[in-house]
Length: 228
Image (cartoon, rainbow, N blue to C red; front, side, top):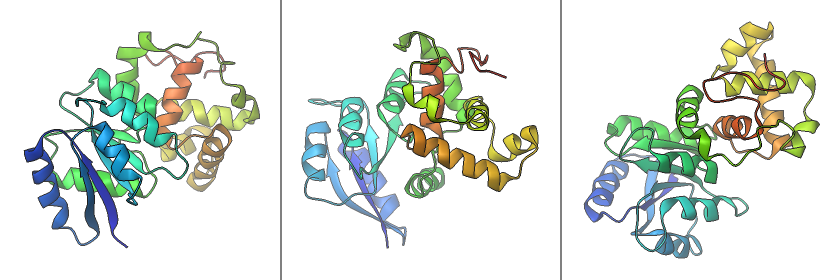
């Protein structure tokens, strides 16, 4: 089955370019387009979509608020934020709103296609290290009190799961975590899955965001309470 993609951008030429790239793929189809967030939400009411390519700076309703509304719905499509500048504050806000990643608008077609496939399969397309760099820059915007008790569901995690969560938030891959904790990659993957389930998170990017909000990881990469 093809990956059903919706393009949300107020620039018609940009949507046209993305549509041409996606149309050439045997496993993708553009099923809807919108020029702003209001149009996007309306289109989603009558169209099944797997992945939304979301611009952030749009009239009427911007991409951040649109992403928040989309991701708050059950069985929501995955959202991939498109931004003009690396480390854009809109990308930061988009990740906090529930997006599974962000890409630059001038990304090579092959990378964009790979990102769409990754998001559709349930992975995040922003490396945790990149997300940490983004959060390091914009962490003063976080509303957290800095205490790792700020999210009650953290108490559901076992000691090992909290340890794995901290390492995920520090940007380590499953293989690196496995080597650090002397575990198999399969075991680490299982722990990560349980962390996502217990905390109600969509992907590893959301783990990093939550770790910053709760003080498990602080700006500059230092571990907070319950750290290394």
